[in-house]
View 1 (cartoon, one colour):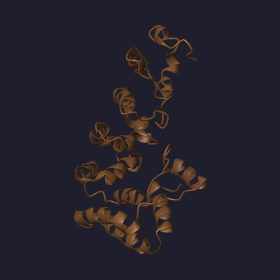
View 2 (tube, helix red, strand yellow):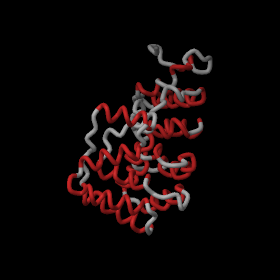
View 3 (cartoon, helix red, strand yellow):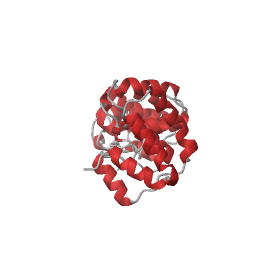
Length: 236
C-alpha cells in the first residue's frame, strides 16, 4: 500500500516542474534531521517557490488517498499546502511530533494553519494532538475551523462525544455546513440530538432559519420520547 507521504511526494513533484529538485533536496535534509530552522525556512518559502494553485488530482488519486488513510480526501489542497504537510511527515522522530506541531502552530500564518490542520489524520501519533486541535476548534477564523471539521477524518476517528458535539454545534454557530463533516451520521448520539433540537427551537422562537443539515444527526433518534415531540411536523 502506498503511504500518504509517498502519494504527496509523487503528486507534488509531478506538478512543480523545475522546482522538483529544490523540494526533493529540502525534504531530504529534513528527513536527515537538520537544524529546526531548515524546516521553518522551507515552510515559509514553499508558497513563493511553488505558488498556491490546487493539486491536480484524478479519481484514481483520490481512491489511493482513501486507501492510504480511510476518509482522506485531498480535493482542494494547494500545492504549497500539500508541500507543508509533506515536510511535517518527513520530520525525524528525534522529538515528539506533538511538541513540534505545537511550536509550528504558534508561529504559523493563516495558510500554514489551514495546511497543518488538514494534515491531521496523516501525522504520527495523531491521538497526541488533542490540545492543539482544540485550539484550532476555538479559532474565530472559519477557514481554520473548517480545516479540522470538513473532509477530515481526524474528528470522526479521535474525538470523544463531548468534543464531537461541541464541534457540530460550533459549525452551526459560525454558519459552516454540516454535510462535509465526515461521520456526521455515524457519530450521531442522543446528547447531540437533544442539543440540536434545543438549538432549533431557539432559532425558531427568534424567527431565524434552521439548516436542513441540522436534522441529519437527529434522525436516528426521531422516535425517542425525548426528541419526537420537538421535531417539525413535516420531519421524516
